[in-house]
Length: 156
Length: 132
Image (cartoon, rainbow over all chains, first blue to last red; front, top):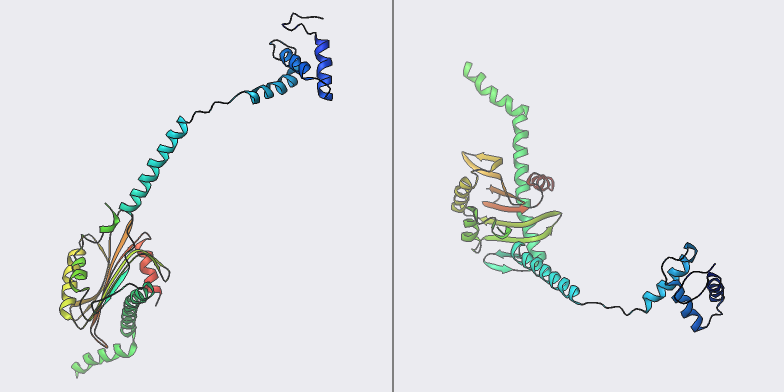
């Protein structure tokens, strides 16, 4: 069967060329003919793998035009985002201020500052001990007895 | 508002200003530092020795600061509060605490601590009291 084709190649001729192509026997001229054959619309489905194969090579040969404008836009947006983030860090996060004054003398050694801070915290903890000790005293039977004795002494 | 000035609206900031750099006083300020397991955004403390008038001044300041705050603890000795723990209302994402203590033995000493933390102030208090 013959179909009207621009390059006047029959399916039989095309099949033979494809076969030779896969065997690596085709010349440059034959490959160009095959490519032109496969680029036609309305070919039977069985030529789809070869069309895809040649289509891929066609795309690869195309000179790709890449516009830099979108990249520049993204770069400027990214720069603005970074600036905003850095700015918010400066304004909204506390700066590192670590110091202590002992008898009016400034200390900047972090270890020494921390030990002074822990000392002040331990002052609070010891006060809690005093409170607990107070509660123990309240529950102390001896103390209660002494206090009751004061009242019993009044009755005599 | 920046977290930087969260303690500036409090009266106790005057105590730090007035006594911080005097003799017989230890003042500490730590920001964003890990302190022995405590995760504080800001830690300020003041230890003043042999200065009863300073203790009175702290008490007066705390009377104003306790408005709107939760008094977690108060110990009164001979009619005078010698230990006060205040849980202040949150400011932004910061929990705030004021802790005051006065001892008389072996020497007269007052300790004033102001804490800002992103952790719940009850958890911070538990941690402080646990670490005896």
